[in-house]
Image (tube, rainbow, N blue to C red; front, side):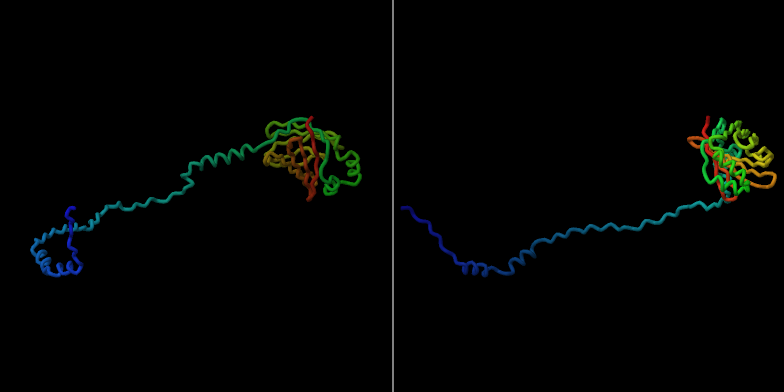
Length: 228
């Protein structure tokens, strides 16, 4: 048989003894014998504050104050628009023959407020205060108006110019004074008879026809017309 390879067993105590036999200063002497290389430290850059630069600023200049209304581009247009609105108010076209088909409001109370006699009130009530009887033929040319009233106890034709102030005209009881004016397409007529009795009459177009309303002493009533 071949020769067996044997190894001598070394105990841990022998390893400790070997280590203990070494000179403890050997490592230190070795380290002392090595040259020490010193690397130069990079100098940190010095940051200096940036000097402040003086900025030359222009001296403040003050302008005299002026009214904005004079500089407004709409000032002249607004004035022109206002004058145009006063010169040409919105009108309605009442031309045509209108036939009364109904009344509205308390007609008897209106006649009482106008101090109409009992006999005349009874006669007006007998013909339904004009509903089905009264007609108005209106001829209009701008502000020139002519109203021919037919079917009342006293027919009459009234002529006036809208916007011309107080003017004499014919009324149901003879001559009277009228003051006609436009307001949002409605024709208003202030009317005063010779005795000083005043009434206010409005003429307004509706989708179905014409409404004429009379106001007197806090009472109002009127007539509805259809165009023939």
